[in-house]
Every structure is written in C-alpha cells, then in structure tokens.
Amino acid sequence: MKRILPFVLLLSMHSCQYFEKNIPNKDELLNQEIKKIDWESVDEFPSLADCDSLEDKAARKQCFFELLAKDLEMKLCNDTIRRKFPSIDTLQLKVVVYPDYKVEFASQNTTEDTVKLDSVIKSKTVGLPIIEPAIKRGIKVKSEFIIPVIIKKN
Image (tube, rainbow, N blue to C red; front, side, top):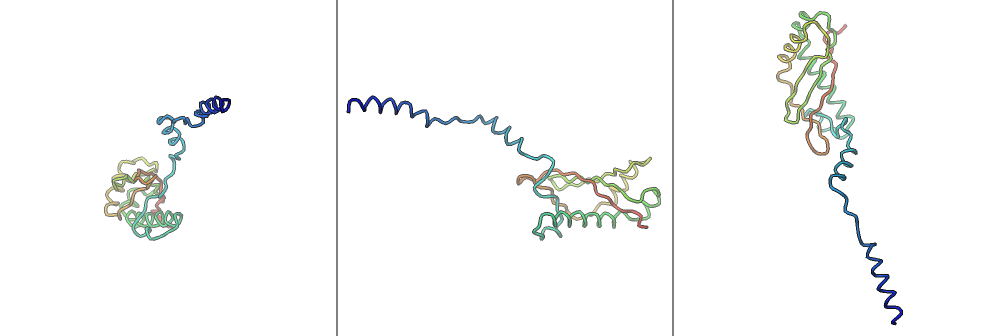
C-alpha cells in the first residue's frame, strides 16, 4: 500500500492538467463570429404584405420584386416622365429600404438632368405600400438593390 500511495499521488497531480480548460478570449471569439457572417446577403429579403403568406423564401423574394416593379411602373408610367425624358424607356431605380421602414428611390440612369428625374420619381412614389425591411440574424437591416422599371412599352 505504501508503494501505491506515491504512485496515486503522482498520477492525481499529473491528471489535474486534463481538467484544465483554456478559456477563449472574448475578442477572439467575436472576431471569429464576425468573419463567419456574410455581410453581402440577408436572411430574409424586404417584403410586402401581399407576399408574407408565401412559405418559400425564393417565392417570397420573387413576389416582392414583381409586385414592387408593377407598383412602380403604375406610378411612374405617366406622361410627365415620358414627356420630360423621352430618351428613357427603362428606369434603373436604386431602392434603399431602411430598418425604420423608410424607403428611398434614386435613378441610376445617366441623363443630363438626374436631379430633375429624381425629384419626379420622389413625387410619384408617394403612397406605395409599406415595405418590411430585410432581416439579418433576427435584426432589421438596411438593404439596397436596383430594380428596372419599364416606362415605355413597345
């Protein structure tokens, strides 16, 4: 028994190292998580109320873009834009949806009078349906995209 006791003591002192755990640095863990996030995509795209009932993510996205393009075409396809900007047949609109439900529209077309075009777009897009912001990791985030709006149909 006297021979076994020193061996057990030596073993128990050595085995304590197996129970030690390295606690990771919180900044290191945060940096690892940040690197994992794809900052160029969102978990859920912006949405309109008519599209919320769809279960499939891709169908909801397609519904959103189709309905928004249709609503914008109805608002912007008027004689004012056709008369003031006869060279434009399709508007490339940059749409920015903020987390607080605010929406901004800006033309991406290169015309001689972009400021005038943007003011017409701003006045004509009043009263569009409420757009739900995009969601990233459970948080509403700002999203930007460009949507083509056909002004003149051939």
